[in-house]
Image (tube, rainbow, N blue to C red; front, side, top):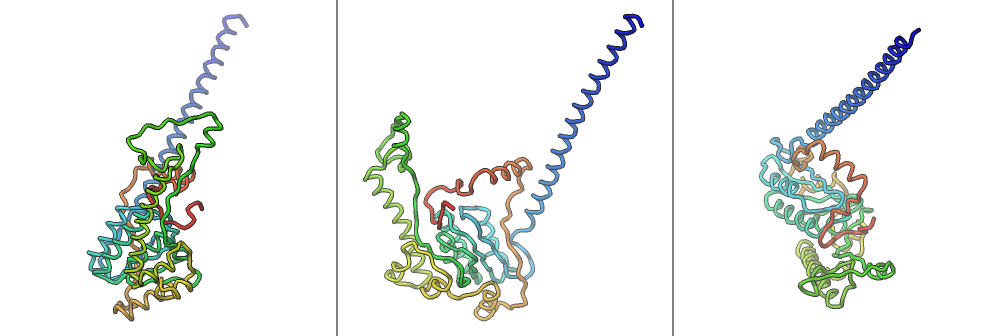
Length: 315
């Protein structure tokens, strides 16, 4: 075999190797594209299935609304409650609550929405394992409150949390420099020690929101200020204790809620129950993926802002 023939064979092998690598790269790209396409189709399908009919269902029924997790302001949920109020097919509403609470504004929004709903149709709250703080505030917006004997409720109060990192920063040799228009601006601030004046100002805000909460309890539960004071020190109650203290009306669950609606509001037990859900707008598939990833990495509590009315916020 001469040198020219040998060189030709070597070149052919090199060309063959290059071609195989090119095909392998192309196959990898197409596989990745296929995986992305399949993921997009699945997410879009799930988005469509999650965003079916919301609260407006034409036939006569009792609407069942679920309130769970950390309560925050939600305009789509508020719109759902407004839709239920306008829907002649909705004869009554059951609010199934299982939540430790959330932001004061989130609880207030639900309270006002449900209270307004009671002006046109009967609304009953059914508490699950937990209905504390802003979740109890939510329940106050209904006509009738029911809980299990083992339900945890109450925790009537408001809190604001912060931290003081100044001692740690000093040990690290870091000195924060803060320039602001007035001493109470941006208080509380983890980068500076809370002054007595700032602490007093924050306490005034918290006590004002606490007064709003206790006013709700007094008004909706027909209690005197002295009665409210005895049960609004932040403690929790079992369903049995809540009934004894006038925080709820009865022990039971969905069955007892239907019985109350039938006996007191004339809502037949034959009328079916249908779940009502907020009609959230469909997300883009990539937003759905990012959202799912975010929920695995970050606590839902990080979404909270403002004053909190929540039992054990660190859990």
